[in-house]
Amino acid sequence: MSKRFPLRKKQAENNLFRPWLIFGLTCAVLRVRLKDLFGGEFNAKASCTVLGLADNGGSGAGGAAMGDRNRRSSAAGRDGGRTERATICGVEYYYKAKWGHAEEFLALFKKNHYPVLKKEIELGRMLKVSMTAPRYHATEDGRWDYRVTIVFKSAAIANDNFDSAPLIKQLYPDQETYKKEEQRRFEILDAHWDLPLKDIDLEAR
Image (cartoon, rainbow, N blue to C red; front, side):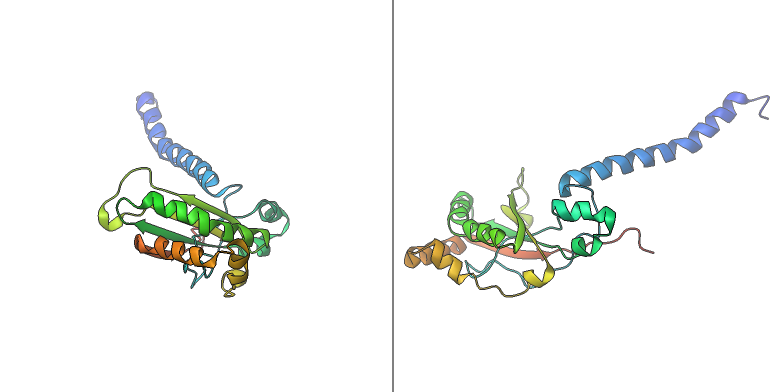
């Protein structure tokens, strides 16, 4: 059959090869995308679950966090630094403002809460704080306006009930104004929820 129908045999071989080629290209694109999202070399084992974290109107480190390694832990992975990377934890915090109040919430967050988070970065408790917003509108039941991402240095630090009151008093001597504005920041919210992250090892059997 191979002598009589060489073209048909070639087509059959191409049909067998084509799915593997598509699979390989898909994996390459996915890896590049994950690298862009998480920074450095993507490692699904880098983050861990964090429980009980919330933005309580300035009483703690609010925000959200995803697993994200700092540059040192990423470099350490090639020479046995997996233990250090595995301690980094992430949680995401979502804020849904009442209609027409999203910009007001953002202004109050940047004024009265973000500086506290930056102080905690200076203290070495956090590695990174960032915020994102949806590019397009969603349905009302699934709508959110801001997602704050915080990368904690370790699960122990993330769950140690750190008292940020001294930092707040240092940053905001006018406590009466600060408390009123923080109360306002939460009054204009429709919802606020926390999403601890847990990585799934797709290579595990």
